[in-house]
Length: 299
Image (tube, rainbow, N blue to C red; front, side):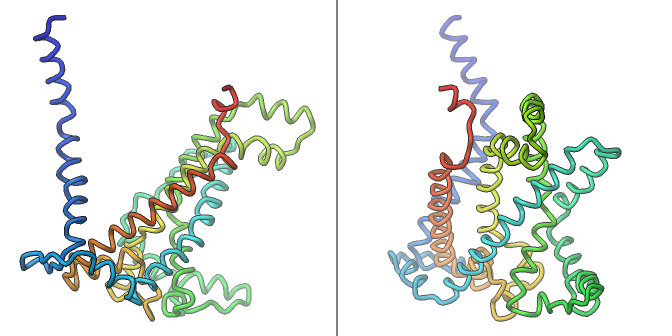
């Protein structure tokens, strides 16, 4: 191939990937660099940014709402992630069975994932209504007096966790694909050796799909720390009763687009970025202890 044709082929390749490159620089890297700059400034959008160094970061660590929003986000993450992973895995195992109407069940359980956040919030506000909601009505059938859910600061986060479990369809589909990739020979050998369904699940299924559990776990942790829409659609920018639903990203939004403290909000965004980065690195560091990779065994 002549030099001219090689150059032409390279240009052709760059032209094909140029939409992604332009999008990355304009919508991802550019805003990130800009927010890093603004985090060192005092800026209300309408005036010229004023350079103030690390003042925003110093103010953040004196801000009680920063700690409150961080605590709310961690509390939600600690409750929501194990619940979401467990429910998604159980659903995937059930939907992996050969039953009549399997495709219909899979579609039904996946559907909530594609419903818009506002619609889901509205639906759950009705379900969690303390007097007319379906959840408290079901609890009353068993003689349990349901809590005030979204009106009681103690029950706001558990209510939002319950709501988040409803949207585990995405993780469920990934688990389902992983379950179908487990070799049937392993189950047959274990069955011949007398292993029951529970032992086969613990000693074959879980290790074989552990890389997928790891992936879903990381994504769930990141998603939970960035939770925003349920609290915003249910409580607006007020953060719920006694700020019990003031998640970190909601507090960031309030500073940026309600109070127009863009510099302060940018500093909050970078602190969240560092927190998520550290937690993700910690999870990756722990993965050799509980994630099984077949390729590593072959080495």
